[in-house]
Length: 218
Image 1 (spheres, rainbow, N blue to C red):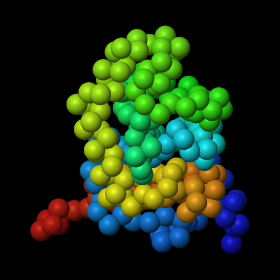
Image 2: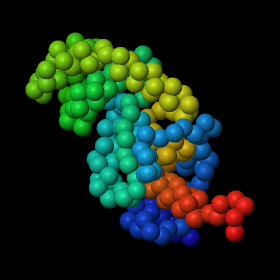
Image 3: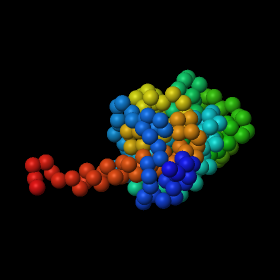
Image 4: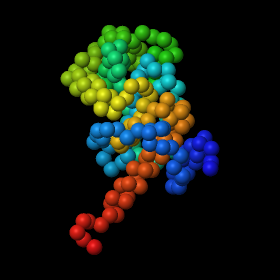
């Protein structure tokens, strides 16, 4: 049998064929209440993160590299998790940036500010002042930060965090059905191997379902 670390490489490098390296109940879990996805026609890979989490920051380069070679039928999405009151301001910052169409533009700078520069971005005022240094209108950002859209997204992510059973980050949910994390998978490298395997499992299940005969017909 191949060592698991070698199988991770096979999973990430040879998406057309691989032995199953990871097991349900060990490196990943099936969620008790599967949820519909927002990615029609593709396998959704939903990352839950927090800008205050150093483990999420360390995952970013690997996630970016993986995204370049991820299966063509997969789609990566992000959502900040909220596991306590202190997590909400930076989650609102992400959703405000999303509302303004600046989520990708602000994502890495926000991580840099918190994790590298150790800036205290803890409320609307401090975060708005920070985004102004990046050339964004702080008043427009503050308005977005307190908007109904952001309120709804905050409630939604809190509910999904609960439903998916997420108790730490980074965590990834594949196709609204399977949850895994760096701690559960055994590290960031294996995490992406688990995600790749789950994408393939979902792809194969979808293909089998599409090719299945209609009940009652030959």
